[in-house]
Length: 181
Image (cartoon, rainbow, N blue to C red; front, top):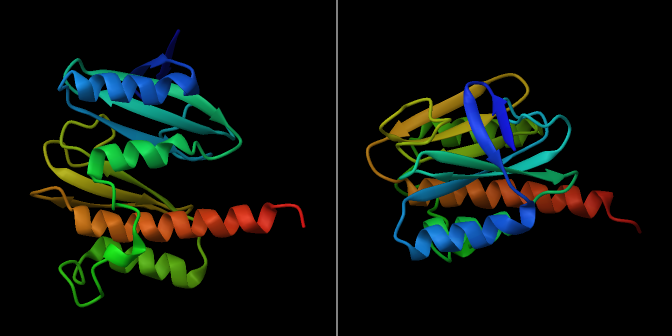
């Protein structure tokens, strides 16, 4: 089935098929990447639930899976496939005096964190259908008030790691707060 939203025609697949699809694309040497679309994300065609997107960049086919009310944990596997097994490792985060201390995006995220504002992010590969800076690497952060994006000439792995660690830390806190006592 095709899901059309904001000018993108997705091929809908089951959530259980996302990891095998990514593994097949990687095994076949194809360029691909993934996104989690949070409930309320401007790119999410499904109201009130998470969605998982896998973009086959070579064939220009975006796949989407409705993930329901819970975060699709398979995303952690996909992120590691794309950016390295240590991408979620807080011990590998570059300190504030590291390479990305001057990133406007990181300053924005840290302000959102300090104010307790909910946010999510997207890592955009140069050919990403959502990329606000087509042809460049980009990270965007969406909060209720705004969408903020920064472009880069090369994949900003260290900055992405900082953002991922903050995001998953927030997600873990949300899960702990909603868990039955």
